[in-house]
Amino acid sequence: MINLVLIHGWGCDSRTWQPVLEPLRSIAAVTVIDLPGFGSAAALPEFSLDVVLDALAAQLPEKSVVMGWSLGGMLAVQLAARFPERIDAVITLAANAKFVASIDYPTAMPRAINRQFNQSFEQDPQATLKLFGGLLAQGDANERVLLKQLRRMETGVISPAWLQALQLLSVLDNREILAQLRQPCLHLFAEKDALVPIAAAAAIKDINPQQDIVVLDNTAHAVHWSQPQQVVDCIGKFLQQHAASGDLDKKKVAQSFSRAAQTYDSVAQLQRDIGAVLLERLPPALPEQSVVLDLGSGTGFFTQHIVYRYPHAQVIGLDIAEGMLRYASTQHVDAQWLCADAEYLPLADNSVDVIFSSLAIQWCNNLPQLFCELARVLKPGGQLCIATLGPDTLHELKMAWQKVDNYVHVNRFQSCENIVAAVEQARLVTDKLQQENRTLYYAQLNDFTRELKSLGAHNINTGKPEGLTGRARLLAFKNAYEAFRTPQGLPATYDVIYLTAHNI
Image (cartoon, rainbow, N blue to C red; front, side):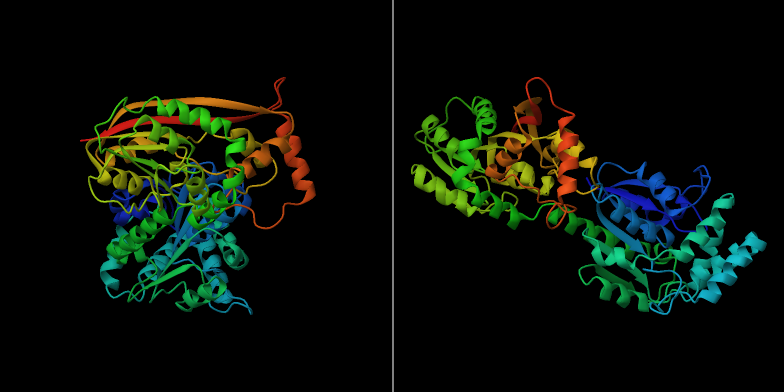
């Protein structure tokens, strides 16, 4: 399930999410955060951007979609730029690229009005908060009802951080970040917003045409109070699309492994060792005319072993990489070859007796979709044997790069818990689950990186660095990796997960 982190706006705390909290929890694992000095969060010595972002980052799950309202939305964008390896996508509610207008960005609050509001809050916080509540509801189709709801909401104890947050808001400028942001973004705007001009929706679309913009009609700044169901529906649709598209570009996956078809087997000893373990978990015999699917068959090495084991079965080698299938068809002629995406199998319901998949499903984005497809094509009583990689895979490589930058350099892999949850959701029954670490050792770092290239196991995630890596950064990376050296050499650890299951 997707981790969704909620960051509130100014003048309130995490309780502002009440109208949408429970519906969101039905579609995501939700974490609510109080900004420093707001709600139950302790105040920090200063409410500067760097300090606040570090405080928020400390509370983020390992991988998450971050959603923020108003100030929280602007901070969510900053977080995504600062920690791209931890944030998969961004959702903002009534958040501008720049809160206070300037000559080169007029679609924001006039500077004089912002200055007057901040001075008013400094002199009389309670009276200004009452005025602020009116601005949150102003222009809404149900303004009076909305205002009553907002005034019943507790705003918490006012701390010095509130004024500092206003000062930060007046100088925040996310335009450059939004233009370069690689993560998917959804921006929800309110048509009648008294704090963020509706023209900001078009302005942000101009800044980055790749980002999704939705405008809710006849709605005020407190959009999640005014139209909670519409907000949840928009978020649910975005999260569904995000889960479906995931971090991996399937086209790049296919291209990468197609290019590696000629070299893969020469450097695939670990892959063969893991696959050999998985072969032993297959049924010892099958009835004649059984159908066996090698999912992610690659060069066909294990497809041929399956043919030998079940000489009277129909064996299908399926892979997303055409280059792998072309190579396999020239090496092994006793199987049928099929180019397809594992998450969208072109096979009939209840048509397969056994699915074998060794080190392939880690290249799938949507585990629930994948296992629902596997359950669909498996016959009742059909068996599933899978080997895949877990999140601790290549942790040395990941940690070495983290000493250099915040980009994603290592492909991300799902945990046992996420895999089991997807299996259960598909109504498959887990028979056995095992996890082990396998470590390879290399004399030189170049030996390891060349092997990864020969395998086609490139970094193809959202958040990876674009372009060439500079010489200084490469040197820093090599020095960081050397810290892991042992008498056996430089280690590369693979977190291997074995799963056997059956259809009911």
